[in-house]
Length: 402
Image (cartoon, rainbow, N blue to C red; front, side, top):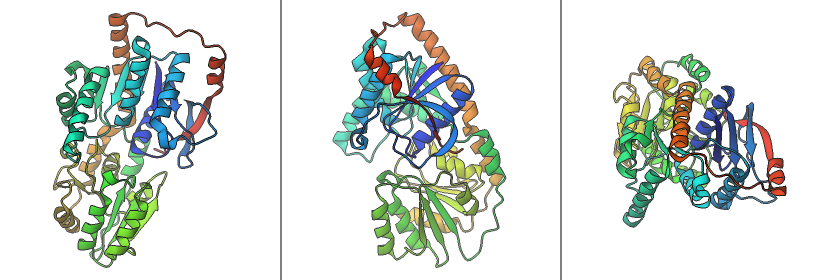
């Protein structure tokens, strides 16, 4: 199977982590996988088995206009390379796929979109939400397959995109490699202190995660010895630091920055906390469950109720509810974890099983597409441009530690 995956950059993020994890497994199984890369400047990822990447070298940064640049890059790649399936690893790449359909028409390979974020967005202003609804319905017609991360998300996708039922599939979010699941299962947490709690949050420092709510709730509930560690980096860092100072909790909150792996923090923490306004299916919750940690989270997506069993593996509170979140922090002090139950839930989100299900789906899709549409017209040879593009193809040894 020849699979192309557009990725803006190798900078750390949940969508990129999952995409590269799948790519590594597909590559290991003998498939021809290429990461079509918008830009390569990233020093945050770890070494792993080599993956093929393809990009257009530039002497300037394209970060501030990454979507138009990705459209240009992917268009150039598809003109000169045969692809069986174009796999879009998250919602942000839907616009890139739409551009390919517009620019290449029938020559566009079958399109698969993994829906990585919630589609129901009450946080948007009403006029924006209406326009977004139209865009979702266009996606329902555009993509050959839309992949949901859970059964509740599948129902949300079918309702909001109006996609044909046969175009929507459910494959659990491939968060953890089997070997990492086993490693996290071996974590033995020390008994919690009666005097202090160590809370852990992890994710990009962006508005979606609503760290201000977490910090205000922590300031209300925390005892002098309680600690909060936030692992992640992003544009909200300065604002978060300022909020900590204003709330008088700067000495109790540690901003750890981006880490290649949060496993050591999972071993040290007493609980994971997630304050997001919206998510798809947050991988960090799966990681915490695999480590046997209880989770306090906002009900930030349709998948959360199937991911966390309230009273058994964690506590769910409404999004934006500061009072409820502060009470949840207090309730975690007396919470009796059920690590075996939590780890059993996390086991459903392994990479190897999901990667095989994707290949089955893609194989069926390619066969169906060939039967329905016949052979696609080819691009004419591009001479020097083809040689220039092939010169940009590299082997990358950068991916995410699992």
